[in-house]
Image (tube, rainbow, N blue to C red; front, top):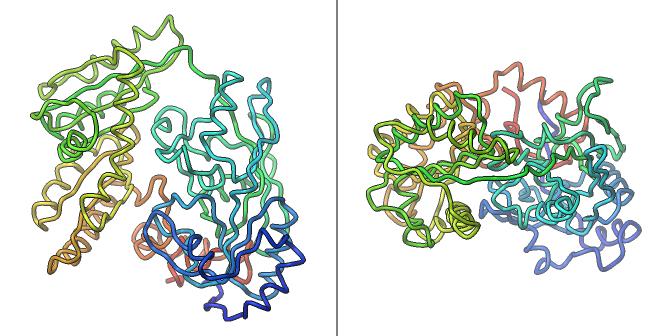
Length: 472
C-alpha cells in the first residue's frame, strides 16, 4: 500500500481566498507570493512556494482547515518556527502552510501533578522560564530551544543533551489533542504517570512530522529542577580516547544529565570562531554535566571522573563558575551555525549508534573523510550515541558534491551495520526519506503506509515526507 498520489495543486488565489475567509480573519491569511515565500523554507535551506499561508490560533480553525483540504485534496503542511534541518516543512507540493506560531499559550501548570498543558506554538525557552518559577523543567532542550516550538519538538521527537538521562519528548509527554487528516479531533494519552488504556497513539504521533495529525495541545510531564548541576570538561589526545571514555562513563551507575562530544575539527573551529579556550593539541573534548542532590554531587563527580580516565586523557576540569559553564555551552551551540559560514553547503546528519560502538564508528568516519577528501566535523550527544556528522562541501569544486554524496551513503550503511539508526532527533523529512528503506523492512513499511492511510486517507498532510514515496 502507498499513500495517495498528491500532485501540486493549481487552485486560483480567488478560490483559496473564498475557502479560507470563513475560517480565518484576513490578517491571518497570506496569499501574495512575496509574503508566502518566507514560510516556504526551513533550516535545511530547501525552499518551495506555498500557495497560501494561514496562522492558526485555535483548535477549531485547524479542524475546519483540514476538513477543507481533505474535501478539496489540497496539500497541507504544519509549521512551527522553521528550525528543522530535514525539509519536513517544505511545501514541495504547493498547497497551504499552516503556521502555529500564534497558537502559543501555556494553558496550565500543575506542579503537584507534575504536568503542564501547552499549545504547539509556544517556544521551548518560554516554557522553561515559566516552569522554572515553579521549580520544574521539561527535559527536551534542543540547541535551538530559544526559537523552536513545542509542536516542532514533538513532531520531530527533538530532544537535545538532557535526553541521555531524562529521555526524549516521547518519554516526557503524557497526552495530546490532535486533528487527523479528515478533520476529526482525537484525544490520546493521560494526565497521570501511569496509563495503559487503549493503544499508545501519543507516542505514534510524536515523531511523525505532521504526516498523521496536527497537534493542537500537549500535556507534558515535568521534572523537578535538580538541587545542583556541575559541568566538567575533559580533553583527549584523539577521538579514540574520548570515545572510549564515553563508553566507560555510560557503563557505570551515575548517569550524567549531558554528555556532549566535539572532535578535533570541531575544536579548531570553536577556537577560531568562539571564545572557547582549549589547548591546540586536544584531539577531542567531552562536556559532561552531572546533576542531583547537593549532598550526593561530589560522589557523583568522582565516579564520572574515574570513568573518564584513560591513557589519552589530557586534562579534566570542573567549571569554576557560571561564566565558564556558559562559555562552554555557547561554543557547543554555536558550532552548527558556524559550519554554514565555512562551507557553502553543509550536509548535517544526526545518526545514532550504540554507545559501545562509538569508538569504531569514529575511526571509520575518519577513514571515509580521508578516502573521499571530504571535511567531516563531528559533535553531538555522545551519551546516547547521537552523533551529528557534518560534511562540509564546496559544490563549485568539480566532483566534490558527488564525492560527498557517495561518502554519505557509506556513512548511512556503516550506521546500520553497527546496529544504529539514521536519525535520532532531526527527523526524516525529505533529506533522509530515500534512505529509509535501508533501515525499515518492506513489510514494516507497508504497515506504516496503512497507518498513514487510516489517519490521512487522502494523503493531504505533509505529503511525500518521512516514508519512502511508494511502498516497495
